[in-house]
Length: 250
Image (cartoon, rainbow, N blue to C red; front, side, top):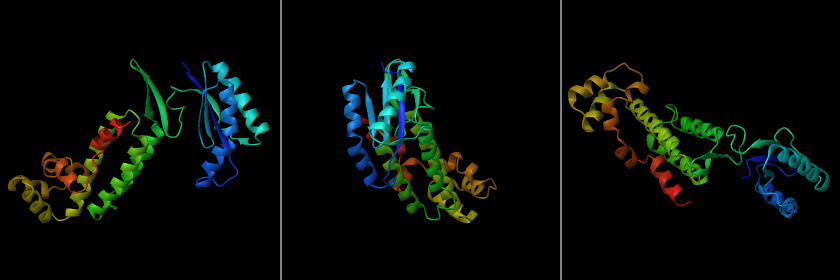
């Protein structure tokens, strides 16, 4: 079992982020791939990000030294020594490759989303579902759908059911909060709650509450009025359902 990895980051000459950069890196670094294939070293590479696998920490340290020498002396590339290192591939906070990390349990090895990728995902969803941005709910739901669908299509291979369920519940809460703010006046809140099936006396109490948006949007009556089915019909992208669909296809 290859438990130790060498993570190598090279600094290419073409502009980073452009469409041409990964293509040129793949062409130029093909020689590196073939060399380490001949040496019998497992190599995973995307553009100029490289992971080499070894059976022990000592072997991985030798591998880092030899691969750095090959890249700099043979291929005339500059290795980013701050990002290049040896690490256990199961050290989730230290090993990250293309946004992924590896996990291990009694059933074997599985792929998971790196904590930094989770943090970035939730931060973007929070931005898209902020009260300031959600002036009109349907355009906001569409933006969330486009972003979340792209994210899940990329990370769908990973095992993350519990995390997705947590974020999904949190996102529903935020959308209810945005809708509650949009209703603004107590009279509008009252009318909408009654229209959605909440008894008049209860709707009046909630509509006139001085509690903050986040608190009221988690009230049982508000949750019932703005339930998942209604929000999905309005354009909400249910992360849990989408993940199940995407993950099954891998």
